[in-house]
Image (cartoon, rainbow, N blue to C red; front, side, top):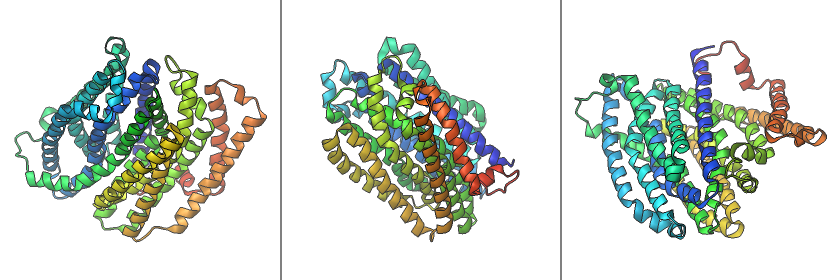
Length: 508
């Protein structure tokens, strides 16, 4: 097995651990606070600072990798790293201070109904303040995670993110009785501190950055000229989620905000595992192809990324639709989270499936824009999607309530992903239609065969009467076997690559 295959498998396993820990965090919150007003207030208040955090965390990694490669090629990689760390620190500090000062007026303006709950405003304001205070640490962490990705040390970046989640869980478990749901944002802040300390020790204080190097303001300014459209594009998803939260809060039914959030996070797990993993692996490949001016290799990298994503994502989401209520029950139904909460959350989650599928494809496409340094195209399309999301949320939430919000998210995802795909297609002179159509058709036939099989097994056996976990396990095994057998019959490229003993350096 070559190094890239080993790194790919290790990254996938590391990402699964990260998402598993994130799931534990969500189920801990659900167990203690379920769909109470405290949970509604917390999830609503953290969306705005969380948009800033994702703007820095994910956007920085995507912008820094090609930028670092460019400076590393001329022997200035470490110097560039130092400049961006110092520049990001001061920019993030300014954002954090402004955010903390504006937390109270923001909450009072966008969520006036929180005052109807005892302590609601205080919880919301302090949640916002604490998350904003972590922005400085998140910014520096993000630069280093981009650096580790550039060095193909993907698993270390995932490990540092996992440490944040684990500390959040520990704080929630230890202090929920004492300070309520505020234990969650405090735990997040403590986790970001630990994550930065891990990087400090790993790199050693001396190599952490060039302490005496004077910051090159022009270099920082030029970098942020590239980063801003990338970061804003990454933040589009969180901005749309914030819009969803505003409309959910308007419905005025306790539990709407939190149940929508639980549903979204559960359905988002396949995207976070498969899309993020494959996109992370694709990025260095297409960035290298771009630096070599090899557009054939660039297009091939995008095509393979989409294919490998479809192979994993399509059956996973199909299985989730079939078993959604059982999944929600296993993940969340304990403590304060009741069977009634499970039914409501599952009904939302099914409608979110479309958003997961299409935003996952868009995650691969986005890497192409960033590598070509055409992030401004994504930003323009993202702004359009925000307006579309506002309009569709207004329409669907008025007609269908909370379910309309989940449905709106999927509709916007279809439009957003379609526009970005067509735009990239034109920018790179197209891709192989035959390659994409042939492999997509194979995945569709295999998934359809799998779906028919698990339906038959569920209908004509007593598997459906088993407890939820056993039901999922016993239905998933024959489904997975049938799915990959069909792909093997088609001699699908992905299956051939996995089964091959060697492989070349361009394999994903």
